[in-house]
Length: 598
Image 1 (cartoon, one colour):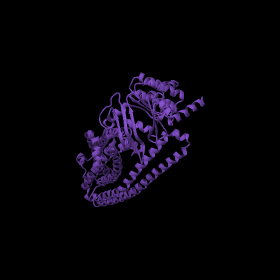
Image 2: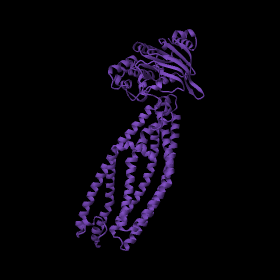
Image 3: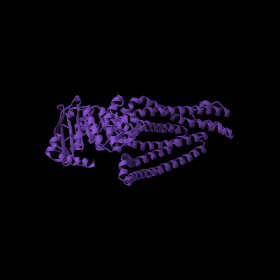
Image 4: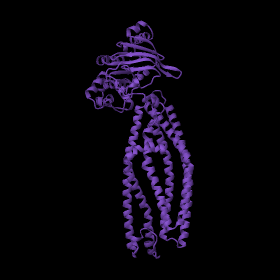
């Protein structure tokens, strides 16, 4: 609990005065509930009893002074009714203000927690993110933050209300007759012991449900994002089976939780019924002995019913607190988890014309190497091409340049300084990266291109679209560049999505352009147009192109051919053809295929 307050309270202390005022309003609401039976008891003894022919009696109500000298039951009725009406108005005013103030400012704190979680995700290194599933990260930034907020807006307030009600109502019961307090206190203590007995079981179940809910969220996310792939390979049945398994597992846990909840409720409700029955019998006995009045008995029943509910409320608060604490453990565990990779970066800013160098760079993958002893010089303005078979380390090489992946041996430098000397955000601004796996947002084509600067000049967006040959298909839509495309680019072909991705990279206008096999879905004619546009418009920038089409690298200053993480061939286009190795073999085979197709 100490750790919970240590990490959560800073988000709420800014609004502490408002929260305290909301708590005060909550206590005023409870005070109104507590004094209402005092008015009802007078209504019974000074109005109902005389109307039924019984003698009007004085009781111990705290509001006796209002009608002490009144003998007319009708006048007493109107006085007490006016008091009840005032209490009702005050009750609803306090409830409305308390609820809205507490939640309004607590939602601001929740928003801050969500933002911190999202910023942590955005700034986290790949090794840190690899320790969490997408479902975990979604729940951390959504439901976990909401449950931490619920602790302050609901559990703290409800627990304070419960304790205050129990204490004050106990005082009122003692004022009526001290023996009336014995059974409720016994029942309350028994209820609390029941809560403690079930606490660990509920805690384990809440934790398990949280993990299973994350797994189900991940399954749903993958099924939705991969819907085209699933349909293309007719794997709807397999994905449905996977969903049903995760759903069944989660359902079983909720059923276990429901069964456990039912057992606990059976125990507490049975206990409460026994206490209520005993208290009624005791009240009848005390009334028979003339120790309490009919009004006192009515007030006792009112206090008793609500008093037992307060003990039950404490029980629910304990259970909700378990859920809150588990969510807080997840949320703040992620927020405070040390990211050693991110911490190793400095604050330097790369130049506007950076030179990149690799010296003996290796990346381990288990007992082998994903990349092994890579040496590379990439002065500003150089055009580098990279080819290699699947899994040879091409994409990894691009990620290493930007700090998206970490190396185990060797050094990577920008302008002669180690890569880790630079600020990660500044590094990100240095590179324009068109990724192999294109992700398009549910927005317009223009908004997807202008992702880096949504408020940039329209002319720059259109120029990038022209260079990437986006205009060619965008103008076929009725709304042109303002056509809305679906999540992950639904509605566009693979080649169209790749062209939007290239335009997005060009719009960013960074000094280093990285293209990771982003023309694989383009036809040869469109690819030639795009590559020619890039050569004409980006000649002064550093450009690294990863591709499986050898002919696309004709204009490169140097070409690397990777095989199992090693550079096995390097040189200019003509030098590699003269070498008559892997690159030449692929080029000749692809040239023959093109000639045959024509």
